[in-house]
Image (cartoon, rainbow, N blue to C red; front, side, top):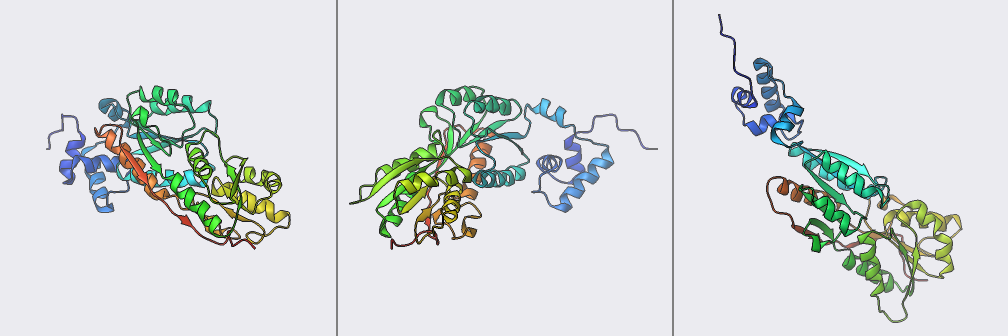
Length: 332
């Protein structure tokens, strides 16, 4: 007759019986895809033999960790942000973490409450292109949890960040249109609170080529915004439109084509970001490739580092280049 086990079964017992590390057992019960099927089966078999059942709430209370990280995005309908989250999700999953996502829907007033709510339910926070002011970011940082800011330069707060060199890339894209012979340019502006928008418009304002004029036209960040801006674009009597992002550029192309105008024969159009379907538009969109996979991975790498004790303030700056496709052509 075998003696009954009187001590409480722990994750260490499971690891010992399965012949794996405690970290591997932890990843299995966190649902991570980074553990092989063979090791996963060994862990689950050992847990079943020992009568071990993980208790997520108890584990969180004991460790003070939820193994969850919040992500706040300004517009989840934008494929650019969706792509960033997807790559972050894959990296987080390998480390046994989950992401919870909130969408502020471009509402400046919604960001503070959503940020605080996410911090209250997670171990840290990633802010994708936040629109809020420095005071809000300061208040979020006072909660004492890791915060990573993507596409927003805020050196004075000492927060960790991942940035793309929007300024240089926008200058190169503008130079491309100038080299094609265009002199009357429209810059279709994006959301006013966007740091990326400010950097791209700053680049356009520095253009000093002989005979070149740049007219700003306020729009937004969606296809509908670009489509609605077409009458104002035509009123500017330009030959090329450089849009804040790909979505607005696609809206512009649709609006021009509805009016019987041809892109690029009658008007050259460019975007920014190189979202997945930019190359499938008709015509294929000239744009700037924003390295979404690198951004997502870098954002998670910095966040994970802080979760394991790294000091805040790390900064990653990524470079990018124009992608020339069929929506731009020499001035006829």
